[in-house]
Amino acid sequence: MTELHLADEGEAADLAAFLSRLLHYDRGAAVRLQAAGTALAVFGRPPSFEVLAIRAVRLAKPYENGLDAALDVTVSAGELLEAVDEKAATAAVPGAVTGPPWAGVLPPRGGWQAEPGLPAPDALRAMVAAGVAEFRTRTQELAPEARTRAELDRVGREIWSRTVGGTALPVRAVHAAQSLGFLRPVSGAAEPALLSSGAWLRLRTPYGSIAVRRSGLGALGVSVR
Image (cartoon, rainbow, N blue to C red; front, side, top):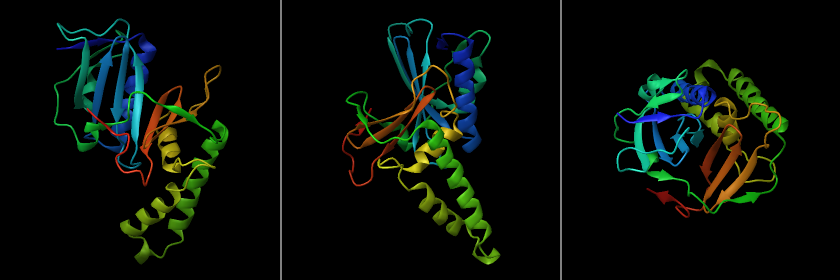
């Protein structure tokens, strides 16, 4: 079985926390792993947010497994979480699973450019809090017979499909970043940034990234691999 050697206990703990949060939204979640050199990228898709979450993990040594110098596999998030040994800073890679459709369509590796207009972190967190409060208020005001799943989903889509400031980033991407622990305050680290490449927008933070495809651009810039 392939074993990943993570940079330290902190990286192992952060990976475990990310997987736990994904499993909170989908007990059967799968993640796609891509490792090359001393970098591991973990891709997941929490269904509630319709975005792609990416957690970068530092490895203690360049990835190698026999004659393979790179890893690219989709596995069970739950099995990977069980295989993380935080004290040893290792993770045994579980057997591959049949990946969900999203696992075959990832954002491009390069070509990212900075986009202006992203509010400060405090404003982003306040935006999410306001959206949650609005959703709660509006749904509580509904008559019991009108409080159907379809109506709750409609209200949620209306709130979370709004864009952030003057950008094209939907608020649901910020909500996902907050829910997955990517918007935690961090001192001395780079602030969140908004990047674009083709049809993709990416909210990058020190803890991970949220990627979403811009509406109206079809499959431009999609990387199938």
